[in-house]
Amino acid sequence: MTKADKTMFLSVLATPIAREGWPFIALFGIATLILFIFSTVLGWVGIILTLWCIYFFRNPDRVTPQRAGLIISPADGIVQMIKEVSPPVQLDMAASEVTRISVFMNVFDCHVNRAPCDGKIGRLVYVPGKFLNASFDKASDENERQMLRLDLDDGRSIGAVQIAGLVARRIVCYLEEGQQVLAGERFGLIRFGSRVDIYLPSGVMPQVIVGQRCIAGETVLADLSSDEVSRIGEIR
Image (cartoon, rainbow, N blue to C red; front, side, top):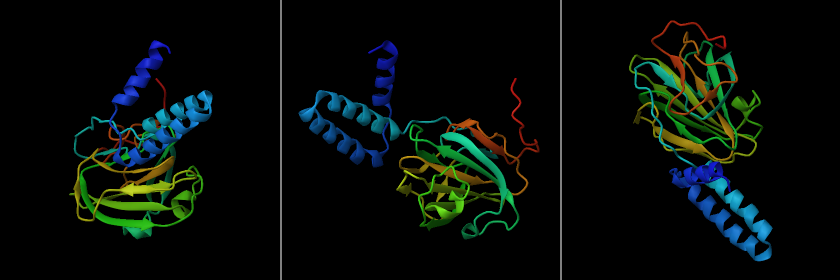
């Protein structure tokens, strides 16, 4: 094992784990012990898979920007789509089209989701559905999803939707209607690969581009206080 491998191994073990992950980690560990009975090679495969499971359920601390008006990414992952769409009718938001930013999480991303800004949970809606590939645009309308509307002090609202994917089969949301949350606060997770959509208030421009990697609780998606135009992705 190289020095870099040892450093990565130790960092995985030192990272806090989401409580929902412990039953899975225990199952992987037990399966690994059984595999060692039959084959040392299979046992080491089990160890690798167990380490991956620990890594998947990591729950690291994040340093969230605190300036009022910033909309922070609720998920680790890649900005997959930025589209002008009508917000979900279930959230009872504005009828006009708004900007939707979709952040896709693969099976190696941290899956703990975080509140995009300070506000009050005005609405929570669970919608059963399919388990299509979360990279498909139609996943926003057809997949199983947990929707929330975050009401801001200035009267505007932001929508956030946890979407199950092809592998993801369980959405976890800790929130209750009427609850106050802070930007960057953990509010749930989605198991094993999926997507989170953010619906910005009308007229607010995104400050990320398609293909950009986001860090939950840290990456700024938009600024409610700015009149800056959408970014074009110029590399400098």
